[in-house]
Length: 345
Ligand code: CS2
Ligand code: MN
Image (cartoon, rainbow, N blue to C red; front, side, top):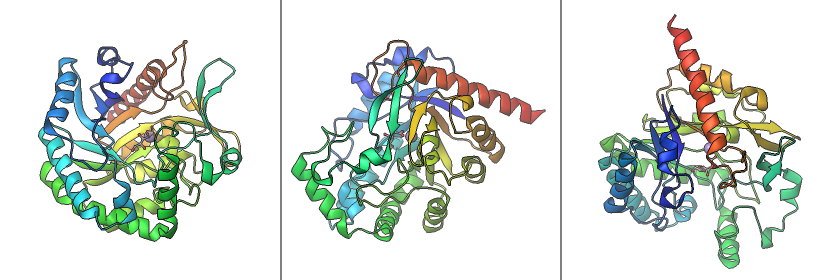
């Protein structure tokens, strides 16, 4: 296991030197942020990032994310050119020592929340999701926390209508088409692809979501059996789906899990939840049980603490401040150490 920490590049208020001071961290998870989706990441840009990490004493073996162009998800004719660009980005990343790429296949939006600063009794704030509130949002005039700058209203409307004819099956076929197209580059470079689950794991605004639990994993591995086709096991995303048995899944898929995002949520209604401190006792996700299952299943991937709260007066990027993620990293590293040593006795 290698413990990592997400770093949003040179504009991130959390510096590499601070990340380095967290005792358990071997490297960062980052991305080239100034290249348009669909274009090839230039070797010079990748190399610059890698050198910055190296100077700080940190590895850059995991990328999150190389975003997938909507035309690939929609299965439009230009997808072949875009998939070739993606494969070229994989080859460029391979030359820089990257071993794992996290990506997602969610149409239009990535994670969805209704509030980015829900206050807990202890004064900390975190992200939360209230289903009814989201359903009341007018689909033709969407304003979503964290998404308002991403799309022009007209662009968003035409994207949403382009997806009207895309069923779950079609979206899944498009994912398989994409994966088959990039697998040769993955095998050649040794890079593992790690798909992030849909967050939350159910359809949104009529948009299909297909990576939601165990059945999705079965379909995915059956369609593209190469070991380079793996997953990012995000406990907060999968855990929002109450039917998912995360401990059993962690054990069963340990060798397909190239990257684990460990985060905690507390349920507050049938579909509602609030993110919480990483410890098992802080919420409804059995972080200890999941770590134990990963170790017993032979997991040998990367881990990072996912979304933290804002604590100690920090006003960090929602989910990505320094302090609470550092606490989370240390807690998770402690669990791994304990379970790994115990298992050797
Ligand atoms: C989120 C996402 O759960 C998470 O980790 O912060 O932004 C996630 O990084 C992407 O969906 C991965 O592609
Ligand atoms: Mn995640």
